[in-house]
Structures are given as structure tokens and as C-alpha cells.
Length: 70
Image 1 (cartoon, rainbow, N blue to C red):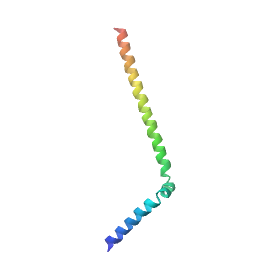
Image 2: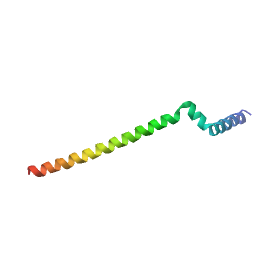
Image 3: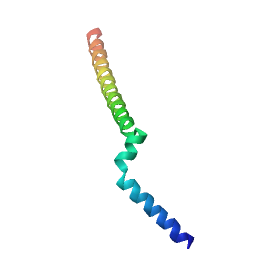
Image 4: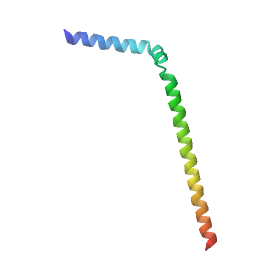
């Protein structure tokens, strides 16, 4: 009997979670945190791209300098 009560409570929890998903996210402010996390990841990716570009440019300039000193 306890097994059926547990299954019913889990089913009720899933139903409530699906039905009131938007309201739950509003109360917990999880949407705002997701937006902040997305902006952070975008900034991190842009910084990594710029660092890669600078590294490539430094390698290119270093090889040009070696060619000039020969």
C-alpha cells in the first residue's frame, strides 16, 4: 500500500512541476540566472577566441622577426 502512495505522490509532483513550471521558475528567479550564465559563457568564448587570435598573431610576428634576422 505504501508503494502506491509513493507512486501517487511522485506522479502528483511531476504533474505540478509540468503544469506550474513557469511560475516555479519565476519564484526561484532561475530564468534570470540562466540568462546571466549564458552571457558569462558567451563572454568566456569571446575572450578565448581573442586570446587564440592574439596567440596566432604573436606566432606570425615571431616567425617574421626570425626571417628578418636571418
